[in-house]
Image (cartoon, rainbow, N blue to C red; front, side):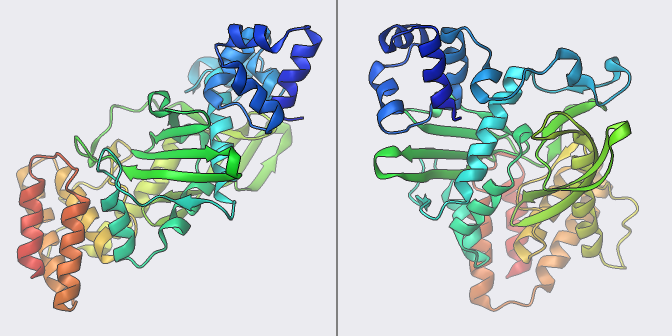
Length: 379
């Protein structure tokens, strides 16, 4: 039974008219009629208002059994040691959104709007994908197909019409804006962009060691049911690459698991550090340079292992160094790498123009100087 069908079933059980329900849920009566006539599905942000109006928990609308409060901490024998990031209600909304985005990625009639967003923060990402010769729609669908509930936050203020979805990837800063056109049976991503304002390569606030997040497993590696102990495999897309991540987990409900977010962060950081180490030459002392840690945030394009992504990674490396000597070494590596690229002059110009547009939305004060260093050594 769908959410829409459950709503009408509960209305019938409570002998509630559409007019009464519309007033209590603060939803236009015409919208409710569309649910029935056109088969539209209520947006995730409306679920709390709907559940309040009907006097039932959100879990009943979603068709899942209520989660006991103690179950949130099944990840640890000591409840005080574990902390689930979201409340039950927030988690259910995130699951709904993530599931819908993953489902959207599988549709054949999805279309990507490549016009400039009002924020002017999407064309640089498209240019980056063009530079790499990637199909932009294929990339967006790959990204959406692997989105995890813990990554996203709904941006309700940006949902200007019925059936719009706007989410921010808080695991990074990708914004995805989706319009669902039910009249044409067509779903359209109207915006996909990343926000670099205020910088990206920086240290995050201190992470709690027992910060647990909810995930959909792409596959299960091993399982000891008697101990509720699993090893699961996740596919995480950062930049243009998808990385397999193997992490220990505990079962949370029939749909997913709880994992320590630090394990996911560390796995992705290890990939970046390996790239970084490979970029250093034998003439430079790598030991004095601070590697990335799970307390640091890298730019989205710093893990692709192509010339563009490598420059992005090296720029990030400079930005997170703590002392002048380490910054000088990191800067030397950036210059050596750019100088060593064997590209045609036209390709170098295209690379430089793409980099400049790519980092144009980054407000880090030294970014113009770093890009100038890249230009001098690239050309």
